[in-house]
Image 1 (cartoon, helix red, strand yellow):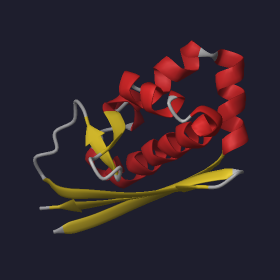
Image 2 (spheres, one colour):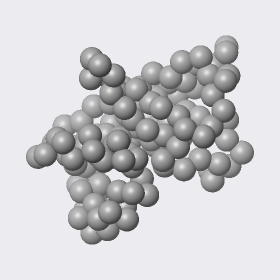
Image 3 (cartoon, one colour):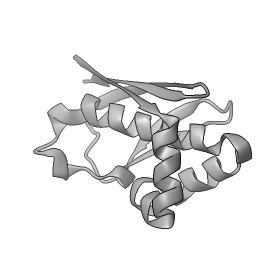
Length: 124
């Protein structure tokens, strides 16, 4: 059994500036349709939610790096942050063999200025 983890923190203003400057080209390169729909539903706090999902993807890249041939083996949309019925976030991995992964746990937090995420991967 192996445990790997990744953590990331980002300034919410950086994500907001990227969205305002690059618009849909930025959003559609980084986020899935489900993530965009979720974040846009948060109205005044949407940038916090975008930043939290960005940080989660960065943390996941770090936690899964042992599994990748190189940094181009995975793209932003191969990872999707979803919420379960209790509104707890979880990570859905698309296009990567996860047969050796037993569990992935994520923790996300954000405040006015920063978003942070921690991803822990337990392998069989």
